[in-house]
Amino acid sequence: MAGVDRTQATPQERAKLVANWVSVDLAAKLNADDLAIELSPVAPERLAKLLVRILDQTLSNKMAKEVFDAMWSGEGEPDAIIDRKGLRQISDAAEIEKLVDEVLAANARQIADYRAGKQKAFNSLVGQVMKATGGRANPAQVNEILRRKLG
Image (cartoon, rainbow, N blue to C red):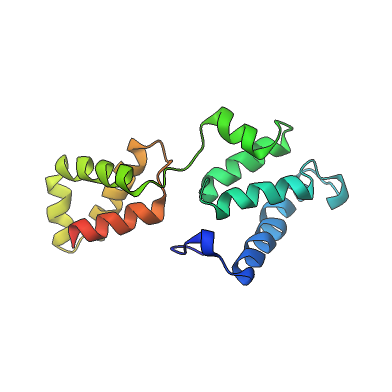
């Protein structure tokens, strides 16, 4: 679902998200702790709440994994963990655009390298925007805005 507006996810995309989380993330934790699924510290309803926060773009997948780990450790409900840890993803296009402009203004060399065909320079610019936001900017939006501005 990368690059997809998750608020408009199809039932198939939603099912895939659930299946991936159950078969990968939840299964890994259950295996690591040698637990049967019915003994999971993360109840299905709580996992569903977490997945809603991925779909509504409150969380990136990386942030969701951090929240999941906290839920597994008994730190509470997803929304409470998100608030306590300050993990809301930045999805405001104007805010991201401003950050991109600041990064571009400070990195003429990387812009020149990117325009000379060096993809690593683009990745570096993305990384700088993500660093400026503490990893909270919506990565798909960062990429889209950077490509548009560098195009």
